[in-house]
Image 1 (spheres, rainbow, N blue to C red):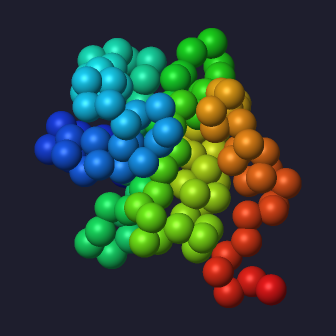
Image 2 (image 1 turned 180 degrees about the vertical axis):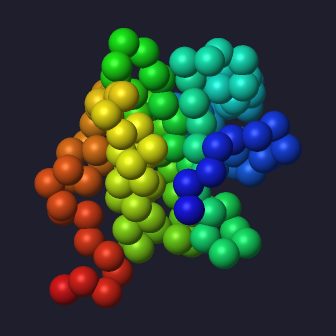
Length: 124
């Protein structure tokens, strides 16, 4: 289930964002989270399954385009289609107000979601 970021999820969000290649540095990570907290065009969503938050997606939303800035899944939950589920849920949330697109860092992942190449663990 996709849920909006709240300040009390800060440590979880930082942990998940730290799996992104460009978010390894603590100061950069803190700046990223602060940007999502303070700038209205930046929106952060968490993915919750059961009681656990296992994924995160961040968007830059402006001029009718929601650009995928960050997408990360807890390593112990990868290769189960969680990232694709997050993208599909985002499309439902955005409806007709925004077109979902990707930036340079998330482009490859986004294209695989669109092409249906991301397989669930049980797929052959």
